[in-house]
Image (cartoon, rainbow, N blue to C red; front, side):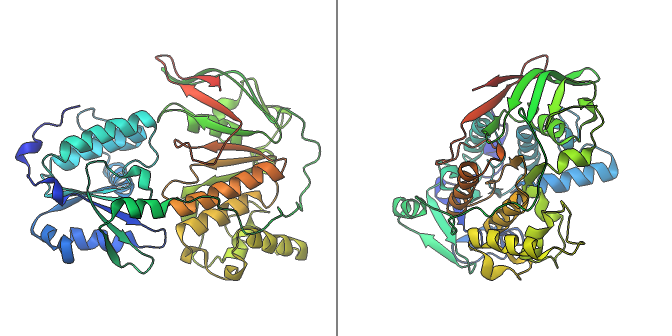
Length: 427
C-alpha cells in the first residue's frame, strides 16, 4: 500500500525515530501530553518545534464518540462509513490516513498493533514503514516483540515515570524476557457455588448462521466445547468472534431459532439470560471502566459471586475467606483494601480474572487478557491461566490475536472469512 504525499509532509532522518518502552506502572499520558503540548525535555525537546498527532486506541474511541454525537463521518471519508462500523484494522488504517492529512511533524504511535490480527499487523507495519521515510515516529510500546524494526533509539519509562535512555538495545531487550513465572499460591481455592448437573457438551453449535439483512457474519458453524477443555478462538478482525461470544453468553437475539445448546439446554427452551450468565466467568479489558473508584480489591473479588458491578449484598464469612485465598494465590493479599483503580494494569487483570473464577464457573471466557500488558505482566497472566486450566474443571475459551509463549490451549477454533460469511474450522 502506497501512502501518497509523505515526502512532501516533513522530512527527517531515521535517527529521530524513537521507541518508548513502558512498564505497566508508568503513566504514559504524562509523556504524551508533554509531547503534544510542546513541553518535552531532553532529547525530545526538538519535537517542541513541530506539531504532533496521536495515533492510538484512545484517539479512535474519541472520534467514534464525536461522530455519533454529531452524526457525521469525519475520519473514514473515503469509504463514507462511521468508524464504529469498521473492523479494528480498518479503523487504524483510516485514522492513520486521516492524521497524515493534518501534515504532522511527528506521529506518536501508542501500541499500534494491539488487538490486530496478523494480516492487519503486517498491513499496518507496511504503512508505518512508508510513513517513516518522511515523518518521525515515536512508538510507545509494552511488548518488546512489537518494536518497529526501523527504530534504533530507545527509552524506557520506569515505575516512577523517569525516562531512561537505553544505549545497549540488545542487552535491554534481553532483560525484558520473562521465563518460568508462577503465581504465588500453590492451590486453587475451592468453590462456594453449586450448579447442579451440567452435562457435556457445555456449548454446542450445529450449523449456526448469523445474518443481518443482506450481510452474513458467520455461516454453518459447528462447534462443541466440553467441561475442562482449553480452547482458543482465532480469526481476523471482523470475522465474527464477538458474534460467537454473544451467542454463548445469551446476549445475541440471533441465537433464537438456531440449533444451539448452552449448558445442557437447547436455546429457546425456557432458559433466561441470567441462568446462562451465572454459569460463565467473563473477562474483557473494558470491564476496568465499569467499577466505582471506591471499590477495593477484596470487594472486587467478592462481587464475582454475585456477577455484580460493585458489591451490594453482604457476603458470607466463607465467601470472604475464599476471596482472600484467591488474593493469596495471585500474591495480592496485602493489597486487599487498596482501591481497584490504584492498581497497575497487570494487577487489575489478575484481580478481574480471579473475580471471574471465584465462583468456579463451568465456562471461563477470556477476551484479549494480555492486550496492553508488558512482558512481565503477560508472563504472570499466562501462568495464572495455565494454573486454572490444569487445576480446575472449568472450560476456558481464550480469545486473542497473539500466540503467547508458554500458553498452550489444547484446541483451537478458527474463523475463516469468505464472501458469504465466516466458516469455522477446529484445529
